[in-house]
Length: 200
Length: 198
Image (cartoon, one colour):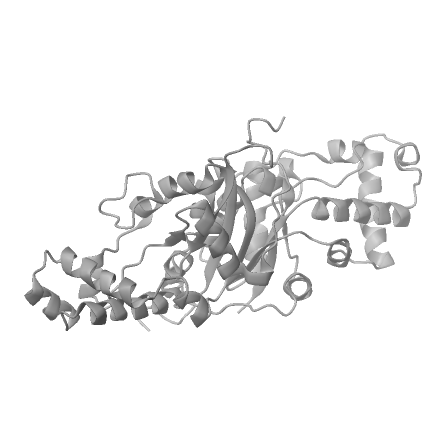
């Protein structure tokens, strides 16, 4: 596989909601059927450090999260205050961050690495946009997702469940593989997928 | 709660059948409590199958009978007609199959997990496996073809045969690794957590 310029790896995590809803098989199926090759996977319980460091967590980032949330309310500060108890961007961002960490630690997750032609982009397409009301039909989040930011806030969870985390780029994938697998990472991709066009 | 080991073997991995196979267990409500994509070592492969003369004899006799039923002289094909020797050969073939490439090892948990999984997997021989079972729906290897090529049946999946076997296999494949405890949503309506409404 090393001779093809566009062959790359991407990191994909099935979050606790995906595992608890019994969607691991369906998600794997969707990745396998486009010819992506599994090169590493295991079930783990995220440590607090792993969950925390999955996000930048800097003050700038927290404030930005807060601002984004206020924008989602069309800057209706009264509604923001009512739902989130505060209009302070840093405080909102911090609350979101804590909720994200809690979400990732709600139960075991499946961490996996997939390899293939333009794997990062292909997986991005298959997973779809985070909000299931705007995710394209046929994407995982459109076909299995029901949670939205508003629904999460009204249910007191603050962050909505998105089933999956995936890498945005090949460089990020490298960092995420290291972060999530650590010393347990072993590349097991030296095998043939029968549906690769050049396998026969 | 009962646990059982499933190994999605390399032929299924290579054919892209992992997701489909996992779904079949998930949809009946079986819970995955350990999961690893793993390259089996020779030692693990050998440890996975028994090494008692009794087992060699049993397995050897089965293969010997397959040869005789097809009118093939096992001495021509295998150089021996001793069930014990044939049993040892068969073990070697099995180890080669199991270690050929990465496999997906999963521990499933649920009431009667061992029996339930065996039922979903189906008969070892694809042509005898019922439609609706994994081997019935995805397998097509035959004993005759396998024997001719001196290899075991490529039947996609391994599942523990009984509870004691499951315990030994889980400890072989997952050792001291954590087996996870969590609630599968679908189980809340199956009685696993008590009567409805509790």
